[in-house]
Length: 120
Image (cartoon, rainbow, N blue to C red; front, side, top):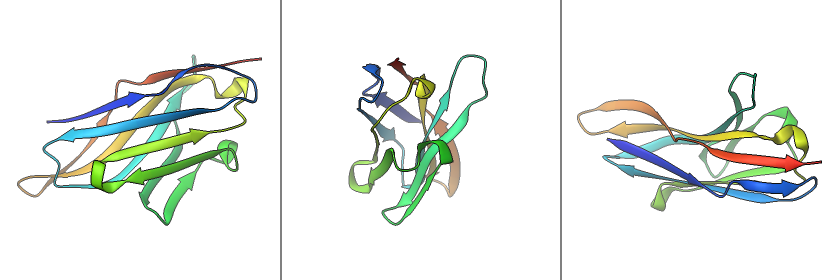
């Protein structure tokens, strides 16, 4: 119905940068919001950042000042620019979207995840 495909993960050294992208496709009338979550081994999945519009962004305290989320509504794409990465940022990063669908329906969707590894 709706697919979210992430890209941009990888291995980077402490202090390095990565940019994640997520493209939503399928039966989308309108995207309400998109965001990024992450899950490290042995830990619960946690919100990293989400965005509703250009002036409505939300960040976890641990990434404020280092990560920037942005959205291209025309292309149903969300980005996460991650700077000054730390080993504790190592996790699988998942894209998430709340989507308005045909027939006045709304649902949430998840991507399969992309691995981010920060070496010390």
